[in-house]
Length: 283
Ligand code: DGL
Image (cartoon, protein in one colour):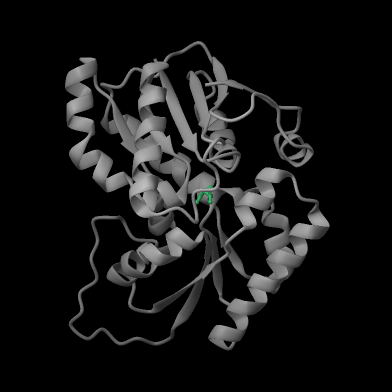
């Protein structure tokens, strides 16, 4: 058995890399749905359907827990799959399986509050409003998940999402850093103009953007806090596995990388981020 990691493409590698550092002996299967990437502009039902198919493929390949290393799939599909699909899958496969998302750990990191915490709205004094900017896909922005969930926990954080349509697609296609810098600068500036100032904290709410986090860091003022999604997800998964010893996660440090798209080497930018050439097999 293994830990499955799913994304529309290469963005989930940012989470995968941190998870393999945290659980070096465990077996991992990565699945990129590159045949259908990017997800950010698809409609909700299609995102649910593709995410379900990806998880089913990972269970079939031997995953017991699948981490949706994709904000878009986590925002749109996770709850539906957990509530309406996973119970039947457990029965069908005759073993414990589950699918987990990456938004809960990110919100916990951004608010400093556990997921179970809900702010008391009985008139606490609000000394200051800090601004959290979320750079994400159009589908994640439209779900308003970050606005809703952060507001439930922290009245003093104002959240503004900046959809960056096309950016994940450019990263998938291997656009140059110069081309990507123009797009990142435009979005950081668009958010600044909308709010009237830069955010105090930024969430790169699309795993693809973590690959180019240096471009976001350069575009934002020095000192802007960046929430690190891969670390938050790894912390949370560590706690989850302590509470759930029933999942078999393998122990031979096996790594496999699958794609629904074209098998073969990934782009130069991915190799640079990964620190070595990386090739995907056909799913
Ligand atoms: N990497 C994904 C995310 O975190 C999906 C990007 C896309 O396919 O549009 O949202």
